[in-house]
Amino acid sequence: MTRRRALVTGASGVIGSAIAERLAADGHAVILHGHRHRESAESVADKIRTAGKCASSVSFDITDAIATRHTLEMLLKDGPIQIVLNNAGLHDDAPMAGMTSEQWTRVIDLSLNGFFNVTQPLLLPMIGTRWGRIVSMSSLAGVMGNRGQTNYAAAKAGLHGASKSLAIELASRGITVNVVAPGLIDSPSVRETFKPEQIAAMVPMKRVGTPEEVAALVSFLVSDEAGYVTGQVIGINGGIA
Image (cartoon, rainbow, N blue to C red):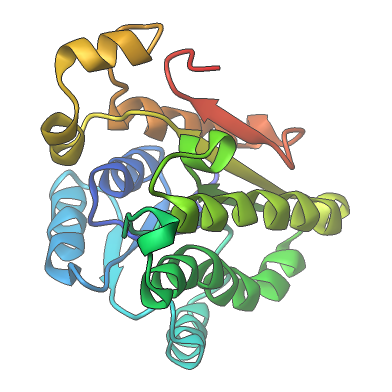
C-alpha cells in the first residue's frame, strides 16, 4: 500500500493510541498529537518505532488557532498530510441547568473549534495531491443525546454537520470526510462508571467494544478501498439503536 502521512490528535488516549498504532501497522507515517498528556503520546510513538514502524509526536493546543497553524506549517514542510484523524476531545459533564459557561465553551472549543483549527490548514496541500481522508471521532451522545452532556453532544453533533458539508466540498477532489461515533468502548473510565449488568442491559451485544475494533473501522475508512464512502456518520456501538 502507499505510505502516507497521518496526523492523529488526542493520540495519548485509549482510542487515539489504538488508532495511531493501527495506522502505523498499516504502513503510514503517523504523527501523534498530545497536549495535556504529551509524554503519553511520545510513549506511544516510541512503542510504534520499537515495532519498526514510522511515528513521531508533536504537542500543541488545538484550541489556539495561531499556535496550531504555526505547528502545522512546520509539519507541512516535510510534505502534505493526507490522513487526518480528529480524535481530541473532553468531557465536562453537568445538567445544563447547573452548567457553567466555561464548561460549555471548553468542551465545544476543543472538539469543534479544534476540528477547524487542525483540519483547515491541511486542506489545500491535501487537495493538491487529489487524495485525502478526514475522519472525526464523535460519540453516541452526539447521535442520541445524553443526560448531563448537552455541551459534549452539541460539539459532536456539530462535527456531524461540518463533516457532511466538507464531504460535499471535497468529493470531487478525491478526499473523503467521515465521522465515527463509538458507543461504550473499553477504558478505565467506562469500567469505573458502568457495572457489567448495566452494560448487558444497555448494549444488545452485552459487552463493550474494544479500542482495536474502533481502530479497525478507521483503518478501513482511510484506505483506498473506502474511496466511495464519504459524508457518513458511522456508529460502532454493539447495536444500540
